[in-house]
Length: 134
Image (tube, rainbow, N blue to C red; front, side):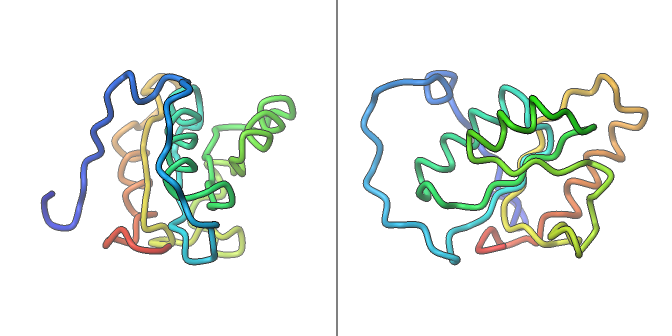
C-alpha cells in the first residue's frame, strides 16, 4: 500500500474456476464497490468473477474493450460485465467520467496499443482514489 494505491496480488489458483467455498456475502446494494476492468479478456473475466464472489452478484462491473463485437459483448453481459468501448472513457454521460471508479484493474495486453503508457495513464485517471464506492 503506497499513497492510496493498492496493488492486487492474486495467485493463479485463486483465478481458476473451482468449487471452493466463498465467504457469505450480503445482498449487493448501491454501496457495493463498482469495478472498472480495462482489458476485459480472459484475465479480466476471472477478476470479475472473484470480485462478484466478494461483493455479491449485483455489483457493478464495467469492462473496457477496444471495439464493439456483438458475440463477445453478449458473453461479457452473460458473465455480469457491462462492456464499454475504450473510446467512451471519460464520457460522464456514459458513466465513465474521470475519477468515477474506486477500483480499477488494468489488464490490457500491450499489443494493439499505439501508446501503451498513455492507455495505462488513462486507466489511472478513471480511478477516484480511496478504493471506497465509485
